[in-house]
Length: 163
Image (cartoon, rainbow, N blue to C red):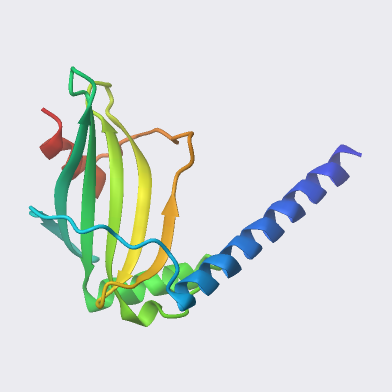
């Protein structure tokens, strides 16, 4: 009986994910996804196989300044965009319109006071060259905190934004 319930739960989850992707694709095509707000003061972070990364500090929380919000702006290289589209396709995500993808904006929350440091992703905008949001995601009220893996973009970002 437990196996049947498990299979039903997995089937429901797959259907829910599929329906959410269809809604997001429809909103992307119609242009009704949230737009990335304008940010100024971007600083160079790193250039890698994906493209060029820049950052800007969004917020500091608490009197101790231990938590920092920071945006990572990725300007895709041609190869980086192509690899990302292939990854989306392999993972069953929609790729309609992604040929115009130019930028990915990711808002991280970084716990600077924890050892090891931790991060959570709060928002992600996938944006075309003309500023249209192609895909969007944000966390709910519960953040998924994870230890920052070494030698990653978020590791480089944390080393800069954490005092």
